[in-house]
Length: 262
Image (tube, rainbow, N blue to C red):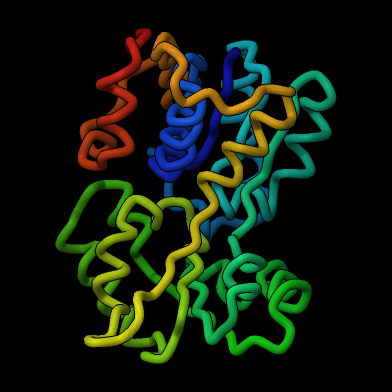
């Protein structure tokens, strides 16, 4: 079994780690193009072109499924990727977890890139899944870039700015960019009021990993032998996990438990 994931950069690590937890025997392909970041400010056509390049590089490895582990790419390029690769390779997009967060009751905040915040796509999710729930959209300029390059001082600065824009009475934060899941605990610490019930964080990694397994008819088997291999593609070329990836537990877990093919 081989599962491929694509993103602009380190945002795919959370979903890759989730797949690995569920199926440690699965081979993983990580396809990204960090030199082209950030994708958020680019035109939809540019995002689609770059996302297709990452998807094609991943598809060349012969995966059983491809996870588009990027909210921006899912918004602008998912249809094009599916048109090119399906039905041969099932393609799973990433949707911010507005539905489960809203179902648990508000008020909630959605942290996302400035390009996604206020977009018709995000507004459609709110209309569909959060009608009647108080929702605050919080743009997080610079946070994805800081996470990508593991600049933790810049991460904390960007998180502080976003937290100041977030109402103190929220019950949950939806992490609307896959990069944000790598610094979830820093976000939780910034938005958690003293002596208040814990603020829930909603990411998408576990959901897309489970959906990928369902699409290929595979059940989770977390106790399977950790025999899966790891292939890293940077700009379409085989490489190794970047040092910034290894800053995060998700990246280190992949390196520690999977042979790296290079």
